[in-house]
Image (cartoon, rainbow, N blue to C red; front, side):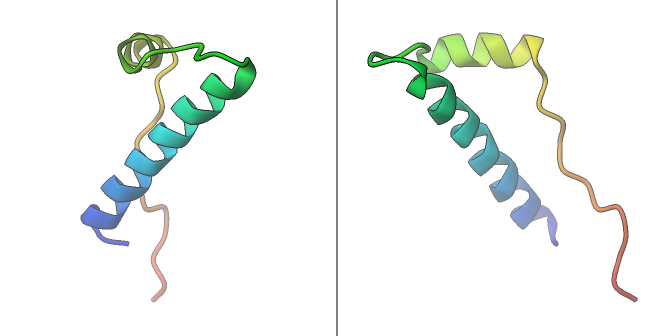
Length: 54
């Protein structure tokens, strides 16, 4: 997995987390700014390669 794909996956996970947090009620629970404040408290770790296929 190259760095572009890692970044793309990270962005998709971040957006999915935002989306699912907003599904908790009939109206939005978080704005994007509110979500970014929340993500400073609950830090989503960056993806990393743990082994290679050699």
